[in-house]
Image (cartoon, rainbow, N blue to C red):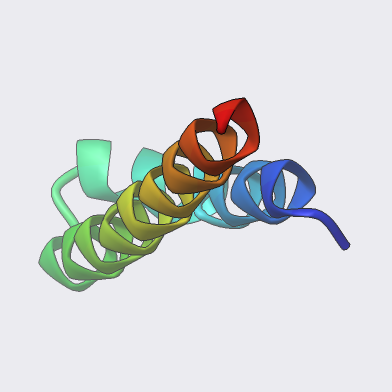
Amino acid sequence: MDMLEKMQQLVESCREDYNKAKGGNKAAGTRVRKTMQDVKNVAQGIRKEMLGSRD
């Protein structure tokens, strides 16, 4: 699986928790924040990969 697919899968996997968090579920909010940190890290990896391919 490439990194872009991994990022998409992470975002989709937290959709239910996001909706729960919007309804006031604090534990779901924590899970969403953790998943978004993972998305950020994958996005940073993609960015580094793209910068490396320019050289």
